[in-house]
Image 1 (cartoon, rainbow, N blue to C red):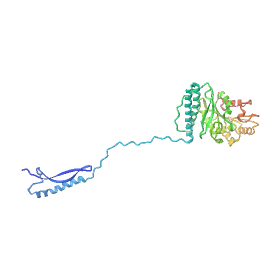
Image 2 (image 1 turned 135 degrees about the horizontal axis):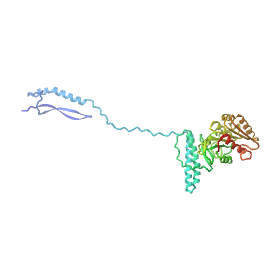
Image 3 (image 1 turned 90 degrees about the vertical axis):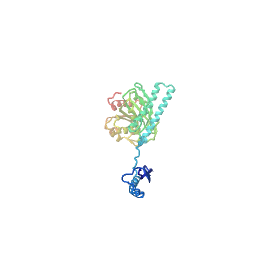
Image 4 (image 1 turned 30 degrees about the vertical axis):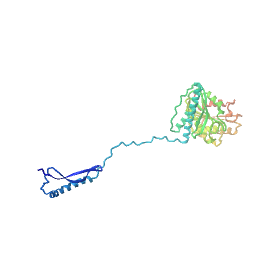
Length: 382
């Protein structure tokens, strides 16, 4: 007869993240007694003998259930890469933004004008003239932006037809460093590597006063730019005399930027207050090769000349005035005495003031041409 006895069995249920014993009961099963449990026929006595075993087993099972759950390491997931905002262009200072807006406006005018010209069947020569006019202005503005270290994207401009043996005259627009729009007329010479001349008009006048003499200079091989000072002619702005050297600066920048000019050979010619402005600008720009002053004053509207002439140094200086124009006549002679470099002084009689002295049989234009060739530009051939 096979012996039977009591044994511990287990019921399980899910507890958290692991299995644990939920209850215990004694169940009669049939299997051979283990060596340490001997059946002696006394059921109660046999059960009492099993108590220690049952107690120990219960404690072990409870310890397993109450043990801290092993933290589960979350499955590694690919974290989204940190999003770095695209770098944003720093806003330009107002004066540089004004230049950029002006450039874009001129570019729109260029492409619109070219389209209209093609629609009406314009010749290649006409299209070339249009392109040169607008591209020259755009290139001058971009040159200013580069000099100001502005961050901008240069425009992809149409190719400019090269004119080697043909003179050209066209109007341009420029923007000064303080945002004033300046108009000018450019007289392109039938030459390359040409010296440049910038012309500054009298108080209350305009660039057209220079037209005849500008064409004479152009015929002589010079690249010439005449401008309307701010508050004059077609230029914008107020007549702020102390700021007009900025107008001269943008004019010089334009001439230097031209492919047909020699940027190292630039001279200025000014009349009346234009003369005072010319010498004041040149005193600050050591690269200017020469300055000619027609009817200058020691002080016109607060624009003074004595200190500027001293600062101008040993560079060539041309002075002209007419005797009936007493203030300019005396001022020209005084400035000649203050100059430390070579001076050519032309004193006339009854010839008027500033640009009024031009276009007459008084030797002034011939003297200026000779001074430019031999004085301002030395032995340079034009």
